[in-house]
Image (cartoon, rainbow, N blue to C red):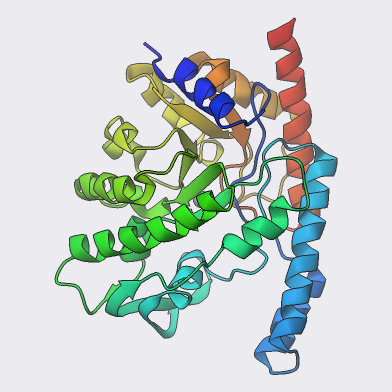
Length: 340
Ligand SMILES: [Zn+2]
């Protein structure tokens, strides 16, 4: 019934990645420290140089790496201190994009929506230096992290390609180059963020085709992050995405997905979201243990990773630390039970 377990553990071992059972990790973004928020404001007003801002982004990355190590996460992220929006950031660093005026997205967030106005091209490394910098600060593996082609396409206006498919596949080719560069630089765990993937179930095949282009020929452990989705429409079909691990928002949806997994067994590794990133409340250790217990009803321990539902950038630094700490304590308790 579960085909994934042995295979993915073998792959981690072959890649030289030593992670314990129930590896703990984070999805990607962390809140920006007050000093960085202040610096970004000053930079936009023209009162801080790019180099000064960069120095503070490095400091913030260092601070988050240290915090994650103190908390005891097993697989780290760089925290995305250098990013604003996850799509705009990549669009700004590729050829073929212009930016719109401010557009309102979920809630009260405003951002500049990318517009595809020409051939999309990767012109050089985007995240690679950040990955190298973060990985250079720790012995623990740091995930390489990019936004996926389907989400880039879905969240941009397209004024150049004849179809959504053409735009998506062009983006896949460009993002493949970024992923290949991360891998050549030593990233062994690479996460492709595709939050938009569940928005149009009829385009799931396109998302799968695009992902194949992204990962083609690259021997890394791949994670896809998908959140706030109508999973009932794309599951189990989404298991065809050519990745090793699905990082899913579970807790905000009251673990409804677990019921879906009872009907159609989950055949790959899963990074199971155990804390809600939309809530200020720091979940109690006991509640997180319960959620991990739910996961273990449908996934074997060797297939299970534990993390928050999504990026934590909208939480405060203290809330983020609180949530991660309780998550790690809960995982340690469950590990003890599994061992004993
Ligand atoms: Zn997410």
